Image (cartoon, rainbow, N blue to C red):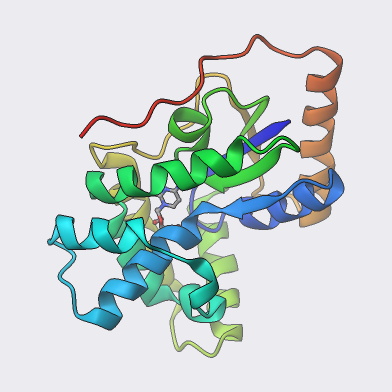
Length: 221
Ligand code: DC
């Protein structure tokens, strides 16, 4: 079973994906970490984000084991990830890795922005996870503060809006819900309620599986 979770920044999709994967004993890939690792690598090496070829080369050889996840989750790396994620060549370079992960025999849970639309259009269950921007800013502010970053909630909100706009408006694989995704609005839900809702959706799918869509095709150069 492939479960695809897409949605906005700090909507709770990452936590939900991790818990859903643990519940169903499925491997989980947070695909945002891949874009964050490419951005961090470019920052470390002094590579310009406008240099699509060099950024794509980094993406083609990215190994998450070489990065400190805490560093990848910083606000600065997140903003940079959104910029490199708008480069078509970077997305192409990361396609196979994500696709392979999705196609494992045992199944998989992937979360990101284009899982249900581009990486795994053939996913068994697709979830679109969102929350009000104010609630997301509140959560992200709490998270960043606990990581020791000095930010204001107002600033976090502005950055979230900027990131959402960039992710949704890029030409290549923009962030959007798949036509057949089930929406979960987490604004007034805690993580346990989100998990319960997602399990309910997966179980409903098991009782009445939907028709499979065609498998993913690598985006053209
Ligand atoms: O989910 P996240 O905040 O860790 O993602 C960081 C950035 O990476 C986000 O702004 C958009 C991009 N991203 C993407 O374009 N496609 C994905 N499948 C996952 C993340």
